[in-house]
Image 1 (cartoon, rainbow, N blue to C red):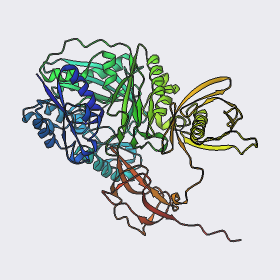
Image 2 (cartoon, one colour):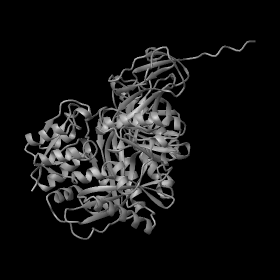
Image 3 (cartoon, one colour):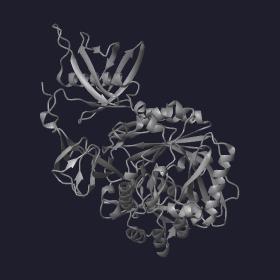
Image 4 (tube, one colour):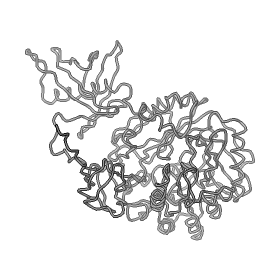
Amino acid sequence: MISRLLVANRGEIACRVFRTCRDLGVSTVAVYSDADAGALHVREADAAVRLPGAAPSETYLRGDLIVKAALAAGADAVHPGYGFLSENADFARTVIDAGLVWIGPPPAAIEAMASKTRAKELLGIEPLDPARVAESDLPVLVKAAAGGGGRGMRIVRELADLAGELESASAEAASAFGDGEVFVEPYVEDGRHVEVQLLCDAHDTVWALGTRDCSLQRRHQKVIEEAPAPGLPAALEASLLDTAVRAAKAVGYVGAGTVEFLVADGRAHFLEMNTRLQVEHPVTEEVYGVDLVALQLAVAEGAKLPPETPAPRGHAIEARLYAEDPARGWAPQTGALRLFDVPGGVRLDTGYASGDAIGVHYDPMIAKLTVHAPTRDGAVRKLARALERTRIHGPVTNRDLLVASLRHPEYATADRLDTGFYDRNLPALTTAPEGAEPAAVAAALAAASARRGRFGGGWRNLRSQDETRTYGGTGGDHEVRYRPTRDGGYEVTAPEGVRVVAAAPDRVSLETAGVVRHFDVTAYEDGTVHVGGHRLTARPRFTDPREQTAPGSLLAPMPGTVVRVADGLAVGDAVTAGQPLLWLEAMKMEHRVTAPASGTLTALHAAPGRQVEVGALLAVVRTEERPEAQS
């Protein structure tokens, strides 16, 4: 029997495994990097062991240090979570050789399936030879052989780009998984990403726990997932389940695993088998009424699964809440999570709590919100409303995008679920959410009420000029003009049609078109104002000349680390528009910084290994000035 378990991971998945361990009476051990010293998973564990350093290569990818930590803490089992070393057969062997219980499949099964190239060979699928890719093969997809989560993955549409993308993907994969092997396969445009959850014991019992649809993705990372996958023809669904079971039996699989497919034109294309628990496993748990982590532990202890797979019920949807700005190329965000409060009736899986800081070293996912309902329509409605009511004070998040995605006709009706959803719809999904303008009015009046309370003042016999406040938010800036009234209230002159019912520093009531709405307002010293579900930024009345930058300046779009500079790049070089100059790594993703226009590189402040803050000057490209036309 397992009595003390170490989770060789961090954040949300560590907290999720600890939750089941508490229910089972198993004590827990966390490992943590220096960057995670105060993290929620460390606070929730019964014991914790430090892994010196911050980078994954120094900490969560050091299997030797993790095994030492488990032995030092008296653990008798190790759960790998997902990502990091979860699909590393050598790590699994090291755990087993140390006399510890490995919560996962046999190392041989990991080797057979965790490498996507070997998994395809096992099923008779040959990847493309990179040296023989022709124009007729395009587009193709470069993928990391180990790991997942979109790391080490590149779409190539031009043959001339293939060599560079192979090198870039390999470097990213080596950094993320300790394995730089990549391969090339045909890229299927706008297919559905459908997967099958498996659970197998050591007594030849295989459960195929239905399907999941994970088609809504950005940068090859999933955003919204659901179970069961809607609208699959019965014959196609049966084929998916059968293929998944055959794959598991072919390698003597034991434990939880997932087989992924791309479905297009009524056909299923095998992608990979993930030999671990998936991020999106909660939707399967909600539909089948099981605890997959508890079952993982039971299987590892030798338990036999019942011969019949549990029966499904209803529909579940999960949304991944990220600290990122979808309107700015999904740029990850950092900073203090000042308030994080999710309404009841929602399953919350998270590695953060109010007051925690979101840093630069790891994935920007804050939490997963999952709901279950008797029908898909009910689940869509329930999750969208729960996200609207969630209070998130801190960095910019994708919350508004999630709400808009769930309510978009293509998703809400399941008429067009495919991986091209965001390519088609992102501009429309990142416009100002409904109510942004009155929220800005509420922010302005709350600020005015706070000033009045501190300094006094109010209506004058001689009518003064309107007060003006501007707030930035999703969809652009909102200008508010108002003036105090004789009765101690306020009159809004812009936007039109707004009547002030009541105004206080933390709550404002406004009437528009005969309807009164109440707005809770929280303002912070950095100029960020949260009004209900809206995040606004107070704009300064005057521009600080020191904030101006030279034309052609390339500023860091997010905090991170410079991982590469283009080979041979030096000050004085001529560059062309769109030419990659350097690469930043932030929050598990590699971000390419390109020349904004053709010109001359006049400054280069980036060097590999340099950590930069958002807005840091990386380089300057001076564009060629066109001579004025002769008169």
